[in-house]
Image 1: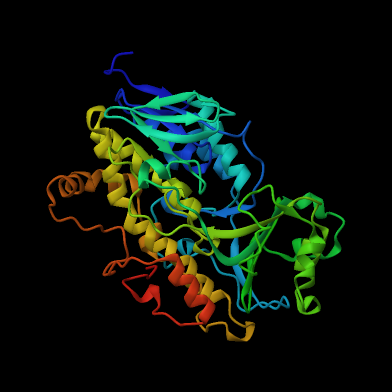
Image 2: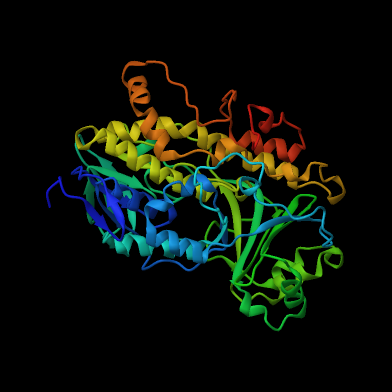
Length: 485
C-alpha cells in the first residue's frame, strides 16, 4: 500500500509506516498498550510472552484519565471499555463499618475539578484487571499484532544496530528496539544496569480477591448491601498498620486487605499463584468482632483458592531504563514498580506505552535508540514522584480509626498534575528540547510534575525505615501544586 493512502483497521487510523521493527517482551498491560500504540504510530510490532495464554488472575485496578487520553482513537476498544469499566464513587469507613463521610466522586470527576486528559470521556475508573487485559488483547488481535506464547526470556543482548531477547530454550528474538515489559522480575536489568536487581520487601502483605457478585447471591449481608446502594462503590477502611479497599458492584466484588507482617516471612511471594484460604486471612484479624460484618462475610465466603497472598515488594527508583546503546528499554513494572497505595501503577504502565511509541515515531528508524532515551528523560521524574506517593498515602491510611483527618477527601489526593497529563502530547511537544539536552547538555526541565515541585531522589530503604520508626517526614504533597482545580 502506498504511503499516500490511509491505513484504517478497526476504525484506527495508522500513521505512515516507519519501518521500525519493535519486539515487546511481555503481554501484560504495559506490553499490550505499547503494542497497540506502536502499531498506530506506524511501527512493525510483535509480542512474546512466557505464559501459555492470558492470565485470568488479578483483582481490580483504578486507572485515571491520563492513561485514557488516546482511548477515543480506538473505537472498538472504547466501546468495550465502556462496557467493562465500573463508575464507582468512594466512601471512607471505620473498621466497624460506620461511614466516616458521605460518598464522593473520584477527584477528576468532581464538578469543581480541572478538565482531565481524556475529556469529554466520563472516566469510569474501576476495572477488573483480567477484564482490562482481555480488552487490550482483543485490540491487539483486531490490529493483527502477532503474539507468541510460551516464550520465557532469560537474557537480553544489544549490538550496534539490533537488540535481542534470548529464551530459556536458546531461541533468539531480535528487533531494532526491544521493549522489556516483563514485570518486576524482568531479566533485562543485566543489559540495562549491568547487574540484576532484587525487589525489596516493604514490610506489608496484601490479601487480594475478586469474584463475580453472582458468587454471593445466597449471602444475606451482601444482597442487603447491594439493594441499599445507590451505585457501585469503593469502600476504604483504615486502621493501625492496615487498610482495606472493598469494591461492591452488581458485577464484581473485590477485597484488597493490606496489613503489616513480619519481614522474614517469605511465604507471601509476588505472584498470583500464591493463594491462601479465607480462614488463614481471618485468623490474622485479632479483633474480628469489631470489624464490619459485611467485609468479614465477603472474606469468609470467597471461593477456595481465590484469595492471593502477595508480599508487597518494590525496587528503588532507577534512573536508567535503557541500555547503553538505547535499543533495550524497560516499561511498566520492569522500569518502575509501585505499591498499591500509589493507586497509579497500572496507569503509569499505560502512559509509558503512549509516550514511548510517540518518541520512537519522532526519532525514526535510524535514530530509534535516541527515541528510547528521550522517553526515559521525559518519564523518570514524573514516575518517581508518583511511586513515592504510595508511601505518603500509606502513612495517612495506616493510623487509628479515630484519627482520620478532617479533610478526609484529601486522604488519597492525586492532583490535577497527574490526571491532566497527556503522555503522547507531552512527548510530541518536548521531544526536540529533551533530545538536545541529551546530545549537547542544553537545559531541559520537565513540566509533567506538580507546578513548583522541587524534585528530589529517594530510596526505598529510607522510606521503609521511616515507617518502621514512626518518623514523620515532610509531606510530599506540600512540595508544589497538588490541587485539583
